[in-house]
Image 1 (tube, rainbow, N blue to C red):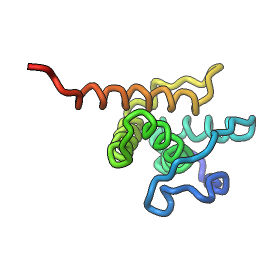
Image 2 (tube, helix red, strand yellow; image 1 turned 90 degrees about the horizontal axis):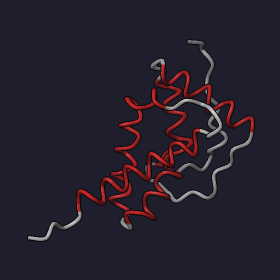
Image 3 (cartoon, one colour; image 1 turned 30 degrees about the horizontal axis):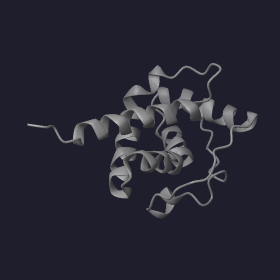
Image 4 (cartoon, one colour; image 1 turned 135 degrees about the horizontal axis):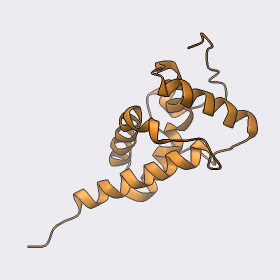
Length: 126
């Protein structure tokens, strides 16, 4: 692994850096960003914690906002977002950079985790 440091300037107002999630605006997927993210994914797959931190800072607020729109509760959305990123450490191997950018993949995983969460807390009729 190289000693390259990741630049966090593309998420200067990230809520996770201040200790609170915030609903982020639209994600942008330009060529430079995709290249940096793919590099971070490759390094995170090799166990680079700094790369995983970069992915967390880059996507946590977006994931949180999306999950909050599904679960309709800010505290549960925080929990689900944390679960997703904890799960990401072991499931990142399943992502293969092809036509779909990482941002679309992580949002899809977020949807699946949020829906699973909603299913688990749904009332079961007697």
